[in-house]
Image (cartoon, rainbow, N blue to C red; front, top):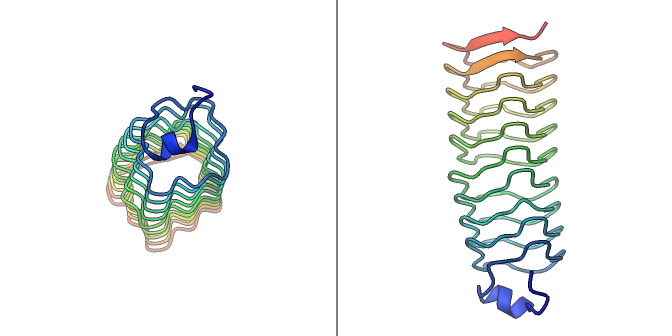
Length: 201
């Protein structure tokens, strides 16, 4: 990152390289950050509500950040720390979240079709009513996660830890759920038709 970059430059969309930047707590609501590289940046508590983050690289510390209504289409959030982040009403088409830290995060009623969640920490996350069709949730830790009423049709959950998860009313039609830990999982009106289910013994 160029050390002479000002917040005005960032807010005006004139900066594309913010690698390692310390922007903790800054108000960037509604700012156009499309295509910006924010790798390793400190974005703790930053206000990114309504921001344009299309194609941005957000492999950064986003703990407690407010991303309400942000456009995260094609954003690279691999290995990002999103614990406690607000992710309401985001546009997440083709976002990559592989390896991200999402423990306790609320991801309700979103369309996350086909999203790559491989290796994510989703312990205690709330995904109620979220569309996760064809999403890859393999090798995820979903212990205690609330997936009630979520749509996981044709999703992949191989080798995931689902201990104590809530799958009430969840659609797992034709999902791939192999070598998983299902201890204490709540199955109530869960659709398992066509599901490839192999429990880890």
